[in-house]
Length: 306
Ligand code: FDA
Image 1 (spheres, rainbow, N blue to C red):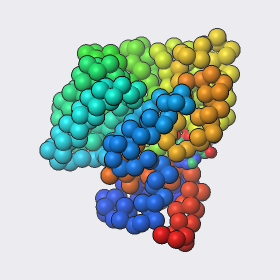
Image 2: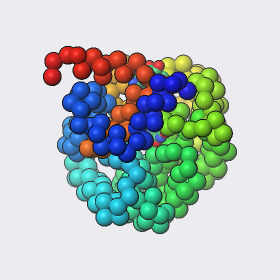
Image 3: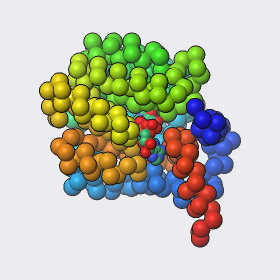
Image 4: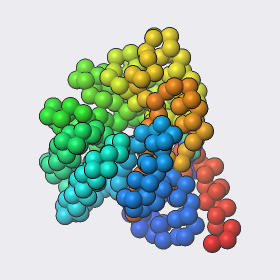
């Protein structure tokens, strides 16, 4: 991992920076590249613009490490309202939630009660519920709560991070249990003891797991902007005779729109992850960390007119 990426990820986890960073106007302006806006309506507008292009959405209300039970309940209530509103408007848009936003730091049962409420509503409104994956210390409990919810509400899936050594074993377990998987490289700062550090190792692990997932998983989501990996995914699916509608590519809002378009033109399914909400700073810093060249455009914003 580069020094720049390390620094950006350390900033993303710093409480003081999480409060102060969003006050800087040029940071706010740069963050707009990665999200349509802070309001629920901004997300709906973005999802509405994706649909005519043939792209579905997965959305998240940004926020993590909520340590106040009342706030975790308020977030859950808001998600419930959002799920109702989406169903009423007939928009195809799947929620993706972070368990630490539902109160995981307060205890697993607190988060489970909120997660279950969301899964129940997603199920009742004909939707699907995705669970994001956070830092490595949360992986066991995230998989455990996902399994519990999935036992009651089958349309539940979880994100797995290819950079963790443990993930190949986790993936096999989830496939055996029929749980949907979104495969990503992994966005956090993790030590060498638990995670591959170099791009080549992470990419190789991703490709191995992509193959396992496509061969044996149910409707996998391959979530990356890495063209070489996307090419390998297409090739593997072609060789194995896996139809283009048996899996999907997922990309983040604001990144590689050209890839979204070319994948669609080739007949693949594409879903874009659209974030909204006021707690965007850590998400934004992780996006900078993925491509430190992005820091350049933040600084360019500082030099240009307000
Ligand atoms: P990589 O970082 O190697 O980038 C490959 C290429 O993609 C770059 O060369 C560049 O062209 C482009 N690119 C990538 N990131 C960019 C950026 N920020 N700005 C501009 N260009 C960029 N992680 C996690 O730990 N838990 C989770 O729950 C999720 N959820 C999730 C959902 C979805 C739908 C996606 C697409 C990703 C996630 N992630 C995630 C993030 C993931 O772990 C990873 O950090 C990013 O996808 C970036 O990695 P790539 O696979 O794109 O490869």
